[in-house]
Image 1 (cartoon, rainbow, N blue to C red):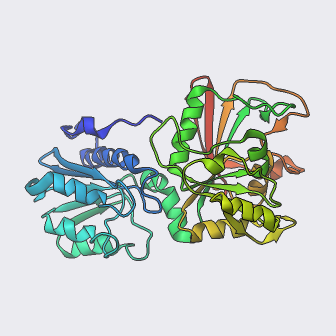
Image 2: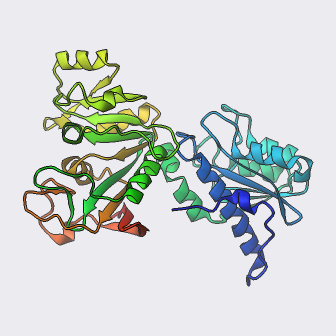
Image 3: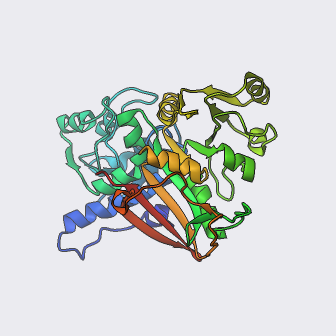
Length: 384
């Protein structure tokens, strides 16, 4: 989880001990560009995170990353740093340079004017306004373009952007902190703290990555969470409470926290809605699905609000409803070496569950990381 700071590698030379030096060199600098891209995580939504490195005569002469939504792109910072040294050099970019005028001028044009002779691009931009056009524009100008260097890693780093730009729906990740025997609270409802300090800090790193964060009404009633980013630097996500009938208390502390808070409901009393709005809370009235908020309608509304990603931090029932409807793209389970026991303890995932093991939701691309005494297991919902 800890990334090497590429600033410490600015005078790095090319690796020469590979059987394929050309590939090794390109991957070396592209990894630095990917590390740079991470610095913009959480600040650029709904734009992608992008890093760029300019190399001339086997030396890094410029580097940059996309800092925030609406601001200059990574290539701008890298080329400004390189100055005249960029002429005749190579630029490494984690995502295809843009070719159209948006909030900023086209980066492909900037690369051409800078005199770059070779561009190495990790992956194409799926945005129809860009897809292939930036690469074509550079090639037409005589720049040699190499595509696909660390393509899988680059696409994974921008999985939020790719899902949102291709579907208009937010990338959905489920986060749970559970005991070794799959409990998120004891029979009395106590849940503080199942996970250790390192895990709790990692949760805040995760929160800053997402445009929105969601909890169910039961979680707000029982735990009264803030759902803000603390312990690390980063923007607060938009807070969303899933509350079909308007049960959340008006004095919930998240309603007084800085930032935007939304209550998504299907049948909230108008009086409750008026009181929430008086507190500055937005209320979304959405279609009902068996007396619950229609989750697909919720995700469509989130996407239309220009929110590209959703982190679910609800309880077992909220987790179950999203999982049962196949709406979770990725899971992050923080597993502590605790055994809570008890059939009345709260399970990590509630709901009815499957009748046959063969029907269980299976994960793929699973990764396990040690966080103090805990383990963080991440994975993606396998496509059957």
